Length: 133
Image (cartoon, rainbow, N blue to C red; front, top):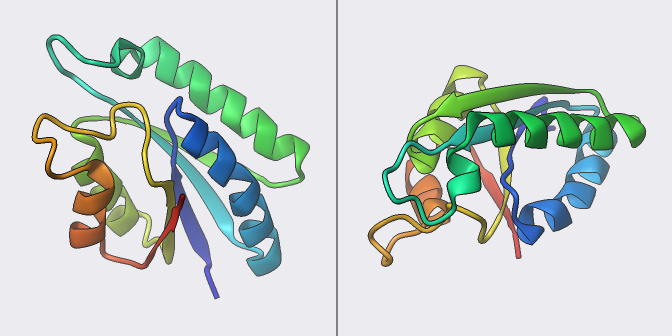
């Protein structure tokens, strides 16, 4: 049913909690898993660790290892930009059938507190989204 699953990750507990659901979902559907993390370019970033390419690369390597240990192969992508737009662009680019993401995370609240990255992805996504609380 879900040939390609996109899992945007950051350093939040919500992303870590969603990982076990992603493992089950990918195994059950024999899906290709794509891990994405976005380097946010911002002056005065509230979460500077998400603005560091080195930290994001380390996060992706750790996530890949975690999924490998669970018997799930994954492809990793690191992009730069505004998270919601990058997530939707990548979903379109890889022809994702599903995006799985935590409902909150580091860097997921943008300057306008009224609209989170999750809300923007919901409104812009080219495919279905599974939000994990």
